[in-house]
Amino acid sequence: MRKYVIAGNWKMNNTPAQTRALIEEMKPLVADAKCDVVICAPYVDLAAAVEAAEGSNIAIGAENLHWAEKGAFTGEISAEMLKAVGVKYVIIGHSERRQYFGETDLTVNARLKAALAAGLIPIVCVGETLEERELGITVETVARQTKIALKDIDAAAAKGVIIAYEPVWAIGTGKVATDDQANEVNGAIRGVLADIYDKATADEMVIQYGGSMNAGNAAGLLAKEHIDGGLIGGASLKAQDFAVIVKAASK
Ligand code: PEP
Image 1 (cartoon, rainbow, N blue to C red):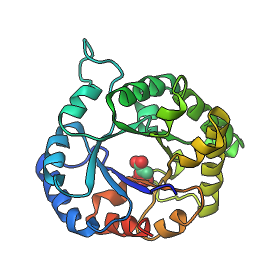
Image 2: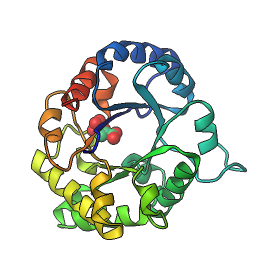
Image 3: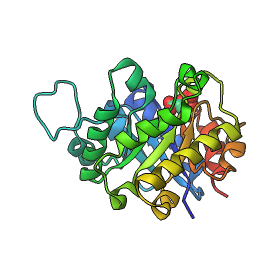
């Protein structure tokens, strides 16, 4: 049985003070969750988030990391720095980073190796653009992204990697993939994982769906065989909505 993981991605929202207030609001609402609950916040909010979440069932994640241990990389943050402030999870290869900040499949692979080496739990995002879906290359696209992300990572380490299927056309647009569309691609990703590793490994790995998941549509998506949780953008900025999603994953 795979344990569901519900992770919020706050993107570029909230100051440290707002972070503390929102986490305090969320804590009692998700206290009885039967899934893993994660909030991924901007770098400058991480210390406040870790402090506010202490003693609760909310784990804190970052939204990116650099692959190098240290050095002349102005503006970047290493895995060791994240670990030092108490971060447990890290998002890698979000489509907004691929689209606006030059993230490639190879840099995703480099970041993933750094995260695993440091003992962070990575959430690796894959997903097709609208153009790729219309060209009928959705599965090829996510297969390529998944294979390159996991290059040189063995089965034992891969079991600790979370994959988030996030169709780019569904992120922040209000256009959610249907339950069946999402499940079909998540199932295809599980097939790719079985090809790279073996069926047992693939069956253990958590594959989330992300893209306009909200309080109204989460239960339907999460009921599907291959959807093991969600990566939630907009709805994770509202404590009540996020709590409804956590509840839907707590069956
Ligand atoms: C995301 O940022 O990963 C995301 C899924 O955003 P939203 O839920 O707002 O579509």
